[in-house]
Length: 376
Image (cartoon, rainbow, N blue to C red; front, side, top):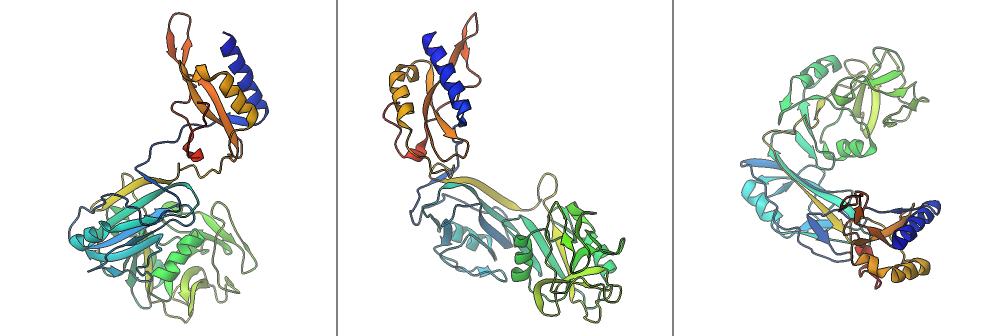
């Protein structure tokens, strides 16, 4: 009873001081050492045949974490990409055999930064004008159609189906997506899905998951709107010079910058339109997709300091708690930067029997310290 009471007081003190018990690190598919070059991710393969468009990315990887392939024989980088030794993402074209040969030589190098991330490998049948953004998991299809009107492009986009997903004129909702279209889609004067036709000065995305969502209000001196708070208008745009109600990108040589133009291009003939495909409910069909959870260090990304002396002393005094019916847990400051070890009861007497404590943290020593504190 004395031990249980002392723990209650400790937990109350931790709460008052802004401490909380951290959940144990979740198991990951791949554990990587920090500041270590050329670590293998294990066996990754694609399962579909034919000529494939493949995307590989490290999503939300800690700074300094990159990958490379030991061989790229038979592979062609997609537009805007190249094979280097410090990749965080790439898209390329090749046969199943050549793709799997390259994946077998994939190596990951890490910097000092730690944290959790995912490794994503997706392969789909290739087609002319098809692009894939691995970080976003979206496909894009450029369709050449010189002089096509925006309304015709909008309708045509909605008829396209790829990998089980229905297309729509691309909605560019972030800087990362705009950079992808800018750097990795090889076409000028492209129609995108924005329009203020319904209400002058209120720009909305027409179709797709963002259909009806306003992204800009006003002319060139206007502003973006939540939830995306993103637009990439060229200088002086939109200006509605001549009833210009439709958006295009890569217009008039300003790659990555948007223009408002009239329905047939404001004297600058559109070359075609870009269709976007988002993952449908249940995922794409006819696609090989692998996602591995990975972590550099413990995957938390924290830089925890050694336990404070008062917590070390408490743990030593109560060390027997951590041997019979108790687990050692890591108590962290709210900012997850410093903390210390405490013992938490793993079994409780419910009045009739010993039962598991539903609030206990199981197996929760923190490997961020490299070696557990000697008092556990």
